[in-house]
Length: 102
Image 1 (tube, helix red, strand yellow):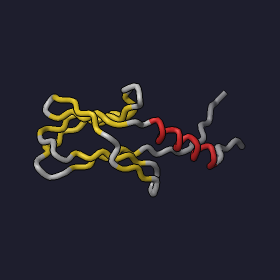
Image 2 (cartoon, rainbow, N blue to C red):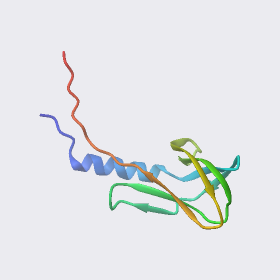
Image 3 (cartoon, helix red, strand yellow):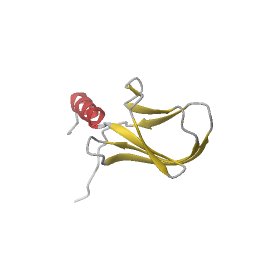
Image 4 (cartoon, rainbow, N blue to C red):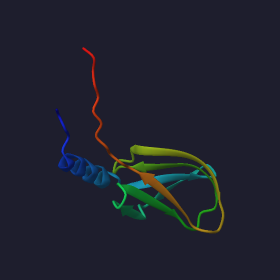
């Protein structure tokens, strides 16, 4: 039986975490560059983006790499008011066995 070892999953997760440089969030049709507010590995890798002062209809959020390439895109329909708002991006990895009939 072939099995991916936990070390490989940990290394790939670390690589993914380091690859994310920031986020782009669309509010009322305007794209805002946002920093990663928090990273957690408590329940799998998660990146968080915090919206503070911005107000309006949040329609899209994307994690980007250092070249601005989109890595993870969320479409949304959230009307943000004066209160803060945090967008979570779960980046969980798991190994699954795939059987191929030959």
